[in-house]
Image (tube, rainbow, N blue to C red; front, side):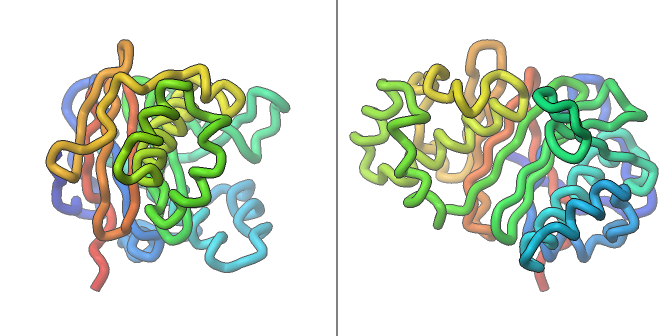
Length: 246
């Protein structure tokens, strides 16, 4: 896995080729320290959604995720983040205040975002892409739903693992990323069997696998204490877009 240095804020260099898929993860506070960051990037709908959060931490994570996905798409396209509009659409109810994110002015670009407590992830590509991030400290509570979201072979794999909680967390972020790309849904998670993929990352940090025609990238972000997964029809590449803490 190769990470790249932060780009200059005015106009990052575009990624070459139409088969590029980028993913990134950062602390919410670091994203909001980026020179291009700010609530001025958000649409009126996003600002209204952010205001609904009862706790400031939730509002910060929501804002950071919606900023980071713009930074990621801006890197892909070689344009300023301020020039990108993010919208969402729910295929079930048709409302535009939640659901799958997209760029109305760039229909050829796919984007995805995820946020958990204090940490956010984003991805952008010229093919459909999905990303998910979860804190390692959440694995215990998530394990309670294992019987409902895992295929029988996956459940056996988790139960036999020396660290069942971390094994389940790895499967969880993979499956969530598949939801983001439209391959499955929350109700259909148990029907997707990923037991043929290794659960342990060979170098302890990253693993690129194939699931059917898709590339699935798993990695661990030690700085954030988080497990991350990104999936696309081309191999996702991790980039650094937020300034480090300090």
